[in-house]
Amino acid sequence: MKRAGGGVDFISSLPDEILHHILANTPTKLAIRTSVLSKRWKHVWYETPSISIVCNRVDPDSLNKTLSSYSTPKIKSFDVTISRDVTVPEIDTWINLALSRKAENVSLRFTSHYRFRDTFFINSSLKQLSLTLVYCILNPKCVVSWSSLRNLSLNRCKVSDDSIAKILTGCSLLESLTLNLCDRLNDLDLSKSLSLRRLEILGDRWTPERIVAPHIRYLRLENYQRPSTLVDVSSLTEANLGLSKHVLDYFTCEMETESLQYMVRQTVVKLQNIKKLTIGGIFLQILSLAELCGVTLPVFQNSISKL
Figure 1: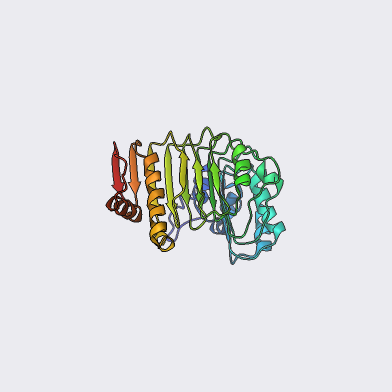
Figure 2 (figure 1 turned 90 degrees about the vertical axis):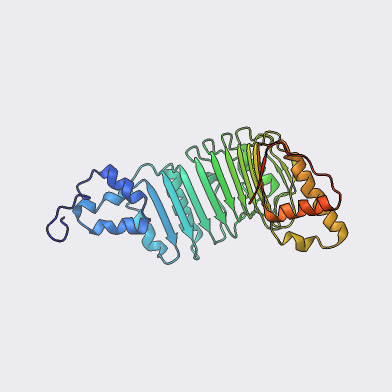
């Protein structure tokens, strides 16, 4: 294979390991197309350690037929976005591919109704997992065992207190947990997650009312309607707090306003001794109003910054 003008094609002369690394940073659909370049490229993508699939226009049958040639024994990264109606067996096929090849980093985005099989919750290879499940209920019926998982991100998931407790029980090495627009949570108890150091919660109406997280070092808390009650964050060193401007729409009468000011005050009381606190404009506005109304605010010993 030569370049136009008779030049040498240096890329094709590179070792397979380097070509695999190049294709690993390319969407799988484009990586597959390289197989038509020459005999040298025909089978290169088969052993690429990463898969990235966006299934909105791609025909699932054609995709499955193509993926049947995929031969790498171990997948480093598996990223699938499904924004069209596909069947449950098709989703099962893609997830089983990731599990059977011991994928370490898995990202799944579904807009289809789907219930995960028990085998999904028993995996010793997963290190990083991100789930975006618009219409799915995350409710494992079996014992969860994600023994190597360190980073878990749940986005738009319907997950109950009992379900998140069952999941976290099976993640003894978990260091980072992100809950983005997850409803059905009321009490988030992370007291048994001894390795957890980072917690991020971004919510609308359905943020946890109570948070027990004695081992975390960093907290990011963005609420839409009301602040969460921090029961125990005794190891915290840094926090980032924010409230949506819409929170003011839900606390309109004098009694409700006083209640909001009290909740905000109780939040900052829990954080008065941490090293770094960052607060959003609405949060600061409520604190300022509370102070004008005679509410005593805690004295902070360390740095405070505004978003």
